[in-house]
Length: 269
Image (tube, rainbow, N blue to C red):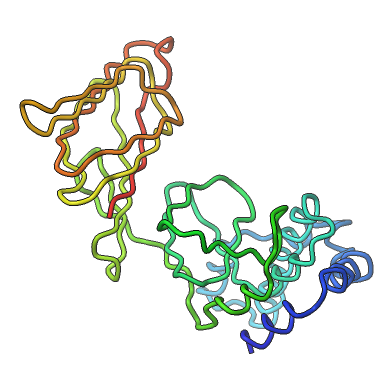
């Protein structure tokens, strides 16, 4: 059914898809109720889950669950339509699975799986490839024929990776089917220093998310090959060679220095 829906949707002209979604916005009674009084649809996930566990009135729970799902979809439709008012790709909001991620969550998406980042901020790590095919919700070129060709139609649900604490400063995320790939989140608080070898075999790419002017980074492969960075800035990209011992120190002293914590995300394979 999923394959049939995707295939049929992508064969339809964008104008037709756009008319379909627009008709939902303009004529659907439940959507109009949501726009006029969305508070009636709202219920926190935790409260709904607690009621289900307590086995409260079945009919009421079914209705509240339905309202929760409808509210989530309509809220997405409203927000996406603000930026892509004439994009037929909005139809995918009614088909794809919605996943809400918390700060620090890492999700693994298999090759060929349709996905879209609807709101918030994220870092995307992917293998080197020119095979990025878009089917909607974008200002860039759309290639429907190749989209149909390369989509993975199996039930490949996104996987939220578990955290593994390497030490007090380093958290690792990995997937058991990708033995040589991992994401590292490194947090260094004022007065702390770490020494770490990111990989023995591969280069590691890093991006600085939070820092201050008292942060220093040093790299040492042997007595002859040394490097240091003193002016570490937010958004700075670093490539770390294999077998390099990296020393990072945070000598934060006062608010004038910048952010208290030094935070860097790294991807290595």
